[in-house]
Length: 379
Image (cartoon, rainbow, N blue to C red):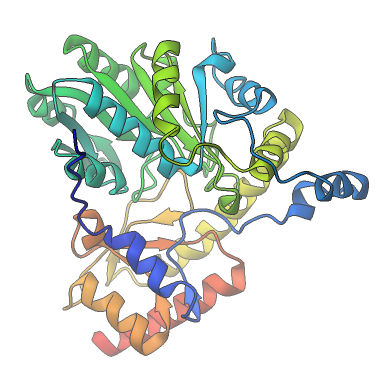
């Protein structure tokens, strides 16, 4: 059987790939300023040990110390619930590929707006995307649960959510997770929960994981966003069904085979409780301080922007009322101001912008200054 895969352009990723290393200022990233290896391993002797690491193949599904560190973050889990992947992108790809290949039903209900990788993979593998949307209610983005119920059909086999959400920065707590779990259980569906921004909250406790609320759940996550370690390309799948984890492992044998040895080693260090706590405390300081900068900037331009404050992640998704599309606006910013911002069209939300604020303060302020120059031209 030939895999009939026709991928549509992944506009967000292509735009970033083409421009992020050639323009002056990039405000598209949704993570925080990356850590250095010396930040992660300040001890000189430990650094020397790392340098002596043999660059061999690593354990293909993740080494036992790394899987134990990951499973320790999920109640009732152990290493057999974990598959280590090359970034959250591979975790998402393997999950959707496995679900569509192993089940007769080919429809997945997807939360929108969202990072558009999962919808793209579904359509590329000849599946069907059935959307349910977030709506603004009392100043918050919340899931439209009635639309979710209506989106489910006899052909549906899973619900895909993103919590904390990209691009809105919204978080969904126990009330919504329980409701989604009940809807999924009634229809005997899987839930795929992308939780890559967990740990980057602007206030309160960490966003709860769907792993705690449902027994047919696949959670994807990585070190790229909340941990400031995107260059490690280290992600994972947490699945409540250990047999399914073994099945997913077989799929990874046909993609990247294994994580890199260095990524596995550094991730194991990063996810030890003391180091993990230190990393996430750093992230918390960055997102809180820099959100205050962006919030003040947006409030001073309330004749142009309206927004819902993010609850997690270093991204905001304001709506503008300028007399140009967001795509035209961001294209002009690229060419005239050497500034990269993601247009809402890449999330199916025209007249919105996704602005990242996890950068160094001077970088963020310089980018906002150039955006301000363009707004004055267009007003």
